[in-house]
Length: 125
Image (cartoon, rainbow, N blue to C red; front, top):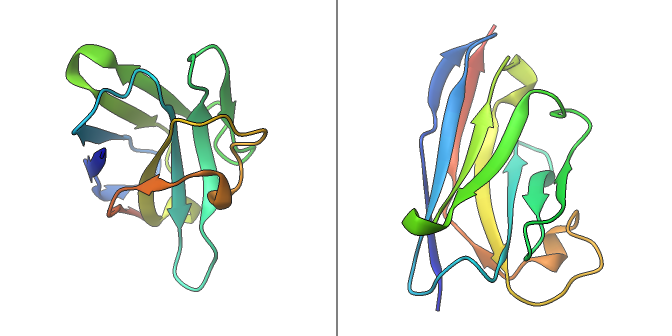
């Protein structure tokens, strides 16, 4: 079974950058679709970014497009989320997710079976 551990969160000023990491243990991530979601206090968990199992397609929420980049390092079995030009509204608990079966949509939390414990990102304005 794959276990996911996020890191890299913290407190940053608006306009700054952070790089989140999601390290996997137990199995290689090369055959998994990987995604990032976030959840702000009092709100539902929402899609941020993902790529397909093949890595051939990448998807971003409109709110982060052009500012965030998802990537993977298969050698390190790690997925990253580079976050630039951070805004106060990006403040949330960020979760890494993995799925090795085909899903018609990666935008829904219901499409993902494996989750990390989350890492907090706080952006001060």
